[in-house]
Length: 133
Image 1 (spheres, rainbow, N blue to C red):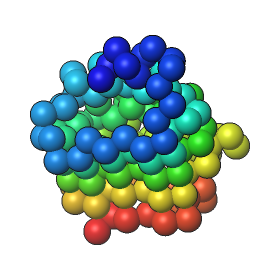
Image 2: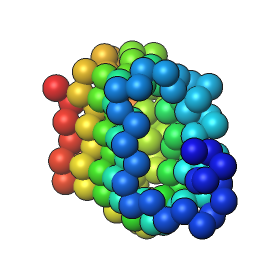
Image 3: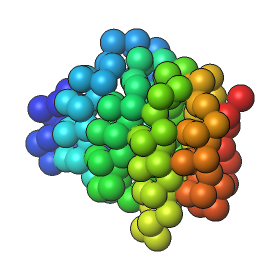
């Protein structure tokens, strides 16, 4: 998958890897390199229930800078209880004018108050729908 994504010939609009529970932080770093290769064609990314934490979220945010057409991002059921830095990076990314994210799902991510504060400005002002249940 990484090789295909990094090739630059792949123009995926949707990538669904939810429920794998195997990606983790290390795998997210590898996947993020591939996401840079598909850049602006990606509209929907589903990474729910994949044991992604702060380090993996930070890698993802770095990769999403090239995914300016991304409209839907599902990260539910990952543990972001210690991910204030990653959530802050996500908030900063969402505030960039070229980002087009409409739907953000962070339900069941165990986000603490510090993480919510880090996320709040970018997500609240730049997403149409945010799921934190």
